[in-house]
Image (cartoon, rainbow, N blue to C red; front, side, top):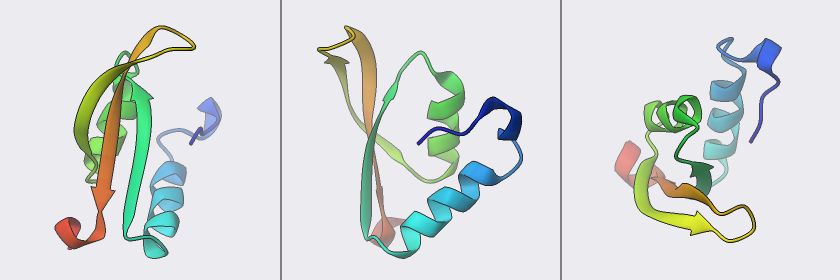
Length: 73
């Protein structure tokens, strides 16, 4: 998920995640470890880091993160 810079920190990302959470029991995503803003955003949205890996196409280190409806209620 990407939010245009001019709309960041305005609640748009939170609303998008909330909308998706309403229709799913589990979500998984990958985010670059160097993208501290995104990592912190997903942590605030109750995502947990499951593993750390290297993306083969970019050679960037990333986290696999997961959210589960059962664990967040």
